[in-house]
Image (cartoon, rainbow, N blue to C red; front, side, top):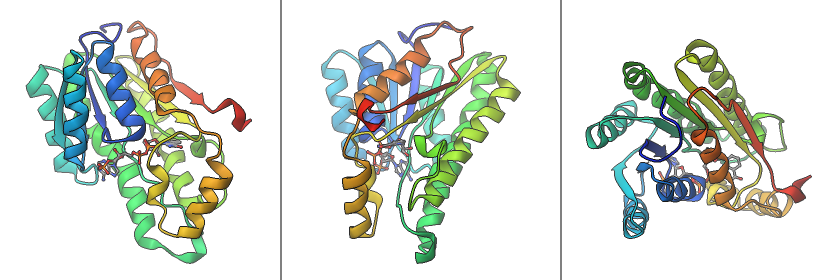
Length: 246
Ligand code: NDP
């Protein structure tokens, strides 16, 4: 295992805003070759341009994590461009909170497709390369909502509990060669609440649960901490909340 961040190829899903964008900027600043994926490619372009202007290395590739072939193409692109994939940050996620009784079934599907299946497709795409390298790391982004169930968030919490369970299962199976890290942030500044379709619900979530928020850079530092440890140290889980969230 290589240690540190310098020189590693780090692919990040959902890198067009929020935590993914902050992670891309920080990891590139610390010497990683970052590969950014998301659907909004014009956002990716401007983030990558800023990273390159600062002397960093960044590549972009269009990515919808609900499409297995696109996730494979994304990881293959990273390997083609840089020769390897050291870390995959499975960060892309949506949070269309609603009450179960409102039966927003399309939003349940979307939550499961992006938050769970997207992570699984990422694992499926990168694991063969990491096994061939004999080393690698998955950093999966769950949430405090993967630890406790909060109001109007049954399906979102279920998706984040799932990310936690499959990260731990993966670690037990492949943890000897490949590191698995789960990062569970509390409320963090990003565009995540935009995926809430009910305007009243969105307003309530922002007022009640998103008053105290971490800057996305704080979560990026937690991700960097797990990556920069020596190869024989696997930080399994990090929970990071705004202090004022209590
Ligand atoms: P943002 O909404 O700012 O970022 C979400 C990212 O995911 C965007 O880059 C978006 O890109 C991408 N994304 C969404 N759907 C897809 C898709 N189908 N394919 C590819 N990319 C997709 O929110 P955050 O930065 O907050 O979210 C990042 C992660 O952090 C999520 O997993 C979220 O659940 C988790 N999290 C966030 C917390 C918070 O309070 N903000 C707290 C705990 C966890 P695009 O639309 O361009 O495809």
